[in-house]
Image (cartoon, rainbow, N blue to C red; front, side):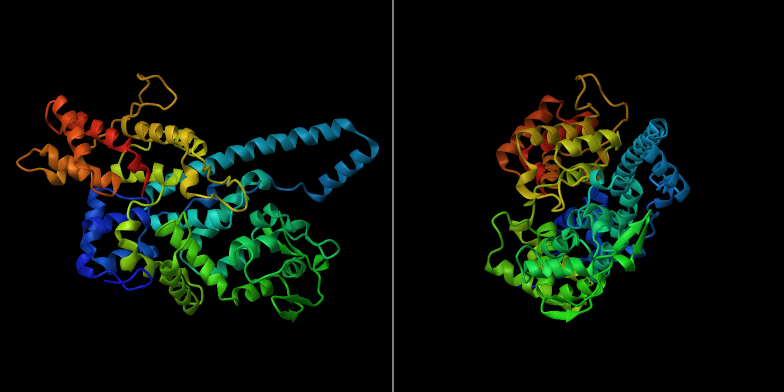
Length: 498
């Protein structure tokens, strides 16, 4: 048997239905019993390739072109001149009109931002390429930028599509792209970074949060010199602009290397450090394998070091690293199964994709995710979301249980008991593979459903409680009883785990 520190692959013969179930939950957002069975039938290597090589799966493109690029377009030169003159002569009527026009554009832009959130959530629910969206979510939390500081929905949409285009691509390419990205440049104020007055925000977070990790292999002086390298990296409207007159052309000393570096040189110098690969692999490990609430032990550190070497050998291509993780025996070890607290987005999307419930109201789902602590497009800070145990408290647990009940039963979380969504839900396909002579034996259904929803086998006492519910409901696994069973199982604490 492979040790924890080994990257050794799971034996193909050991890849069964429940291993495929775990793989689909972690490398995506879960799937129906039929989708799990199809993945299991592929075998380990082909199943992982099917998920990671998702570009081979036909799918619609995210509709970037549907989002208006001109809502927050800066005024043309003649309008700016008109406003300057109005300020000089104190023409409040012209200035007030300009304020009203800007407020109107801001309202329209906030509306478009809400539309983008709904579209992305719908994409996560419906995409036939789940790992693409899962990694888009990962990069959104890693290179975290928030709309409140940017105030331009088009910039958020374009950045989101950048993450999607590089979902399992090359980390070097993505890091270079992010220092040219208008959303990031605005979020970390690099548009204010000029040689006369360097702004350190982007340089600091590039090293501290995006590549090396806090306190690793760099000094405050490296940050200051990195800020000088990034001077002149700005944007105009929706496009990156290198403003040469704002750039500091002098020599900089960054991580021991001296030269007339610019921002792209700065990225390459950072990525020459081996610790970058370990830092990113640790984040990928926490996202896909185990969130390590008490930190990595020695064996896990060795696993991550071996993974990091593979990352460096692949010249920062992400796909080989993900293939290694998802094929490794360690990924399927019992302590790593049903061990992660689902993020609010994972909870909502996995419930819909696994149980094939109606999507119901996207706005309601997004509102619930916000209450549960994850408002996509609005990370709490440049650190993104802490995740793990921070997702759970008494308030969020109440919302978590209610939103799942809403998806299964249609009962609106903020409504009266009789306030039910009219969309019907037929849950019988979840257990149809258990049918024998046209019926489903109750105990077999309960044993299967608890493991399918909870990820692990349930205690006998819980099975008996659920059997009693079926008996009180007529003793048969019919459609209403099945919905009741799903609601009861999903209310168990273990349903919060993935």
